[in-house]
Length: 566
Image 1 (tube, one colour):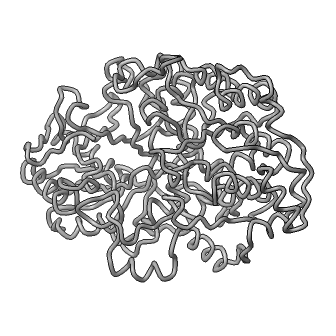
Image 2 (cartoon, rainbow, N blue to C red; image 1 turned 120 degrees about the vertical axis):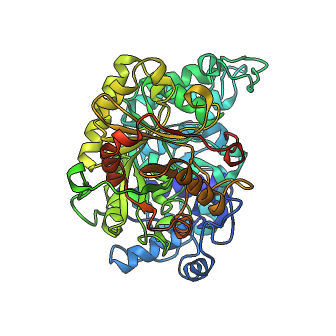
Image 3 (cartoon, one colour; image 1 turned 180 degrees about the vertical axis):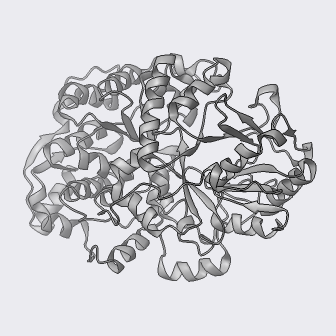
C-alpha cells in the first residue's frame, strides 16, 4: 500500500483492537522486522542467523512473523482468522469509526491526523480514497475534520509538517493520554524501516503522535558530523515543539514509543534531558499484541540461584545473552528474526533481555515468553532497566528517582541481573556508578568494553566488585557474532579459547548478541571439562565466590583478535 492508504489501515486496526484482539495486518516483506531472515546473513556476515535445515522447515510453517502469530493464536484457541481487504474491513468495522479525517500526505499531516484518530475515533483517509469508498463500494463515511482547514493561513517560513505539529500541540495534546507519546521515523530513509507501522498502538491508546527531529543545540554539542540547517542552524522549530510534547507527559520518566532521528545517540541524550525513556518499535501489529490475553497469571521469573546454591568450579564460565531483548520490536518479532522459535533454543543456557515496562504495557506478550520458556531460558534486565535512555546524562537527583523505578520494576519481574548501557565511563567519572547500581537493586551487572570506550582506553575482560560485593563483569565480546570479516562463530569461539588459555580458571566470559543457533555452534567448540555455560544467576553467584581468585586480573585480547568499535 502507499503510505496514505497504509495509515488508513493502521488507524482502523488500532481502533478495532481497543475492544479486543480483532485485527492483524499482513505486511509481508514490506516491513523489515516482519521477516524471519531464513536465507539472509543480514546483519551478520560470517555466520547465518539460522541453521539451514531448521530454516527450511520453519519457513514452510511460518513464512514471516505475522504468520507465526496467526498460527499460534489459532493453535491455542485464542482467535480464528479470516482474510479481508481494507475496504471489507471498513465495512464490517464501521461501528468503530465516528467519521473520516481528511488528509493529504503522511509526512506533512501525521501529527494531526494520527493523534486525532485516537482521540475522535476517526479514520484518516485521502479525498481520493473516500471518493473511491463511496463511488465503487457504496460506503459513505461522514467527514469530521479536514486537515486543509489548518493550512489556510499558516506562516510560510514554516513547513506544513511544522504547522501541523503546532496545531496538534495547541488543540490535541491536552486531550491525549499522557502516559506515553509516539515518535514516527523512517529510519535509514527506508520505507521498510518506518515506525509508521506501529502507529496503531498510539491510536489504540490515544497518544500524541509526532514526526520531529531530536537534534537541537544541546544534543548536537560535540557531534561535528551534523550540518546546521541553512535557515534554522542547530535550533530547528522541531526543538521547542518536541520539548513541549515531552514535558507535557506524565512524570517521572514517561515513555516514547517508536524511534527518531538523526541517530540513536542523539535520541537517548535528548530524552534523558527531559527525563523520558524510549521504547523501540518498527515491527507492526503491536496493538494486536497488546490485546493478547495473559497465558499465565504470574509474570515473575520463578527462580534465581544464589551463592548458597552454587559451588565454584575450576572452569571458565560462559554466559550467552541475546541483544536488545528489552525492546517491543524484539518481543513482537520473536526475539530478532525468530530467535525464540529456533530449535536450538533450550539446548544450552541462554539469557534474554526484558524490560519491566513491557510487563506492564504488554502482559499477554510477556506471558507468551514466560509460558513457552525452557529450563535453560533465563531473563535479565536490559538495556537501561526501565525503557531506554542514557543514565550518564541524568542529574544526580534524577538518577536516584530512575534507579528506584528500575528497582521496583526489576523486583516485580524477578529480574535480578542486568546489562545497563551508558554507565561506564560516564557515571564512573562522576563517582555515581556504584550509587546508581545500588539504587537499582541489581545483584550483578555486565558492561561493554570496546577500544576507545573503556577507561584506560583498552579492550578486555575483567570482574570488578561494588563496595557491597556486587560483581560487575566487563566484556569485549559484544556483537562479536554479528560483523562480517571479524565476526561469526569461529572467531568468537577462538576468542573465548584464547581468554581461557591466558587466564586459566575460574574465569568469566560474557558474550552479548546472537541467536540460539550461534550460541549452540560456539558451545560445540568449548570442551565441557574446561568450560561451563550458565545462566546469569549462576554466572554472578560463582563470580561472587571467585573474588579472591580473580579480582584485579584483566584479560587483554591480542590486537589480531580485536575489532574496531562500531
